[in-house]
Length: 396
Image (cartoon, rainbow, N blue to C red; front, top):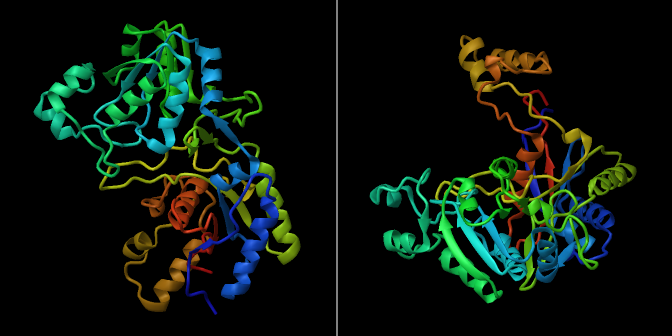
């Protein structure tokens, strides 16, 4: 009998994870207990996914604001540091800013406007249009910003991030100057020692600043790339992907987790005979239409995954086939014709009109986004996600 259900995504509950916990055993046991509890079985190509948070917690990958300050001072000095293009986030950046500010005599904070890189808005385009401000060329001082726009609070958090970040810097003991600009080279009018805090555009920003003559240019991915006094670290991503843990401590993005996904894959196979895929996921890659926020504040959606999750979907658009190739067919004849097309499809459908409108994205980005929406970021208590049927098609 053919399957009547396609993709199913389940949040799997597990114990609260602490440093040193065996995540392989916890994940395998939690999934198998869910199978028994809910009366389903694992199949080949099922996907088991773990949120990056529990991986980093099990690794004990933490650092303090003092660790950040020590590394920043060693790499950028302790005089004036230009901190440019940070995202507006209490959870993601504010605590990092505390550590950065502790290292410096003065921080020149350059904020992009009308929004940050991931869509958190300082202003609306209507506001800047009304004041005839050109965000591509105009540089605003704090005084000019307040004169034109006054106080602006984030739609969802209610925070005035200009005041919030200014206070963080002052409370850390550094002098603060805030400017608003979208051209990286603008910061060179204030200092030639720069920490660029953008995520996905950081390579371009670094290149522009270096070519423009900056003395020192580093990104968040260059801070805490090795342990400071026994702290956690991430040799590839540094502070990127970090989250607030306590008022003076961050949890870093997990490191070295390829072994973990492969270990879980092997153990599931040894117990059930099912050849599943396994991945670690962080933020999904999707955009909120109301707040205009692009969710992806991590450097990547998935820092580790088994080899079967490499690549992109290779799918035909059923409605295209129905409306074009088989427009004169109905019922079982139409169904059979579409099934035969799927079975006969090429391994690479690039430039094939019948694949237009399918999602040309990495499998890990698509599946990770599904996982992020399934697990949520609050109190659901399901940091493990099991996805079944994702690789099924109409012929299964």
